[in-house]
Structure formats: structure tokens, C-alpha cells
Image (cartoon, rainbow, N blue to C red):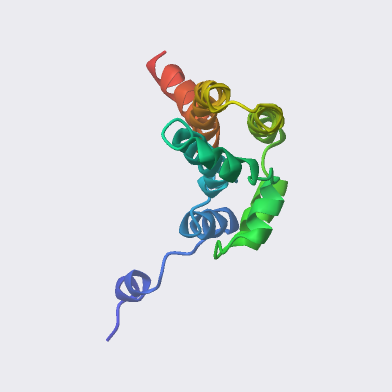
Amino acid sequence: MTSTAAIADSSPRPTYPDEARAALLRAANINPRTGLATDYLNHFNEAIMLLEMVPDLPECASDFLEWQPLSYAEHFTASNFRARDLAIEAYETADAAIRAEFDQLTDSMTKILTEVGAAMRQLQQDKSRVALAEQAIVWVKPLVMQTAGIINGAAEADVDSIMAGA
């Protein structure tokens, strides 16, 4: 004889659409609360890495000058990210306020890096390129950290923890 309790225990817990989507996003390294993936930051970290090489190897400035800005969708379309279509779709359906803050930060990083590239193309002296590379790193690294916070829902978590303490 099989009891009703035994049958209930053996069946999987029902999943709801939001839970299933969150699990799908987590499995793809996309934050389910924000709909954003940290993989996009690799695009900016690559530029920073190239800039960090310039002081020791000024000829690496030419490598940085090959870096091209990519939008979120362009980055994932060109990447080998296994869930790139999901990443693009999650970004497009992300909360408008989160996406606006994210876009503002990534637009700022893109503008800084493209302006630095334009300025480096005009400079002839390695010393000047080194100074520009070092300054660009100071400007962009904190923005990468802020953007990571947005992706990971840090602002939301901060508000939640403050409200919990109230």
C-alpha cells in the first residue's frame, strides 16, 4: 500500500515561471534580479589590461588602440558565451531603472576609453601615452566596480539591508 504522503514526497516540488526563469538565468551566470551578466565587464577589463601594459611596454599602446567599443548586445553576439541569446533577452527585459543606471555607467566607460584612444593617436611621445594610460585606468576601474555592483544588485541589496535594520 502506498500512502498519499509517500507519493507527495516522491513528486518534485512544482516550479513557477519566475522560479524556473531565475534558475535558468543563474545557470547562465546572469543575475536573475537584474537580468545582467558580469561577462560584459570583460570587454572593459580587456581595455584596462591593455592600458596597464603601456607603462612597462609603451609599444602596447597600439594594442589598446585596436580595442573597439561594443554594446551589450554586440559583445554577446560576438562572444562564445554559451547563453548569449538569453543574456541579450534578459538585458532587453531588465528593469528600466537598473538598465538606465547600467547603461549610463557603461556609456561613460566607453566614452572615456574612446576619447583616450583618440588622444593617444595624436600623441607621439611614449611618456605622454603612459601618463594618459595611467589616468584612464584611474577613471575606468572604479566605474567597472560600480557597474559590477549594479549587475550584482548591490544597490538593491544595500536598500534591503538598511530597511531590514529599520
